[in-house]
Image (cartoon, rainbow, N blue to C red; front, side):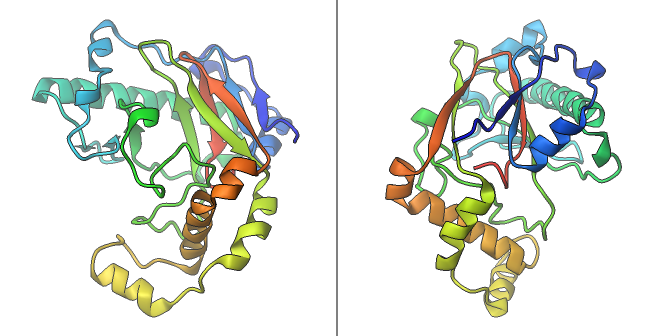
Length: 248
């Protein structure tokens, strides 16, 4: 398979510039990788890179667009410092996207920014929640009605461990394989899920199909083992960008 990685040699968040081929690449489901664009921690923030900064029973810490921090452990002062760190990363990520992909200016909506201090390889989780499996992103509780999921990632592992991704085939190939197996959308089910507050708003047919694709991919053991794929390590001090509902 052709490499889904496009490497870009940026070293400064604020001085990002654009090229048409980079926009075309991310629109095609490729991952833009910045091996020298690390997120610089302040000295006191290194103490926040520990597993108990995640509250018990939570998968990640998140900072909402409203500035509210959720899912965090630690003391009140540590949570304040963590919110400031995550907020600074979000600001730099927005600056990067503004310079890198100027076509999207004025078209983006800020979603929660997450921090995951627990290694995915050692986290107890269900098949559906296992991010080590090939999948496309879809949100069970937050319907997005066709809005794309553009994400900026960085690896902050204090032990120097790479974040390893498995990247598969292009979205169209994957969708042709799995969507024929999808259960049909039922409006009454979407209304029931909304009434029970399982979803934050009414799930659309688009969201239903994306969740079906997400789950069908993860639960297909043969595909996970034998499907076309490549392994890509993202070391600490690197950043990568993609439409995570399209890159598989």
